[in-house]
Length: 116
Image (tube, rainbow, N blue to C red; front, side, top):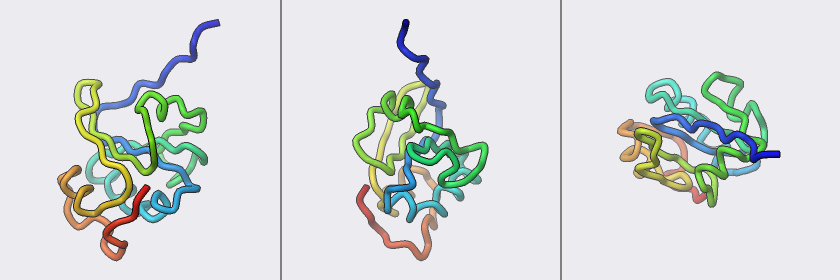
């Protein structure tokens, strides 16, 4: 019996979240916006339809993608190019996420910072 097949983590912006994480729940509007404007893909660790029942949300309840990405905390935002991670930020920090994604005006009305 071999090891389970690992998911192919796509290039671009990838976030890993879980519903039980207060910072992840806080940034749901940001995740939805980034999915729309920047092609964000979200892996969800504990609820297959959190933060939304959408084609940009991928069930990671088996944690295969999280293990492959080598996570320490959620939310984690990763940028991948040619199958390789080139940048990462953990937790919610508006300035970091705006610089990381190149999208301004993220999370208007949210606290500017919440650790993961």
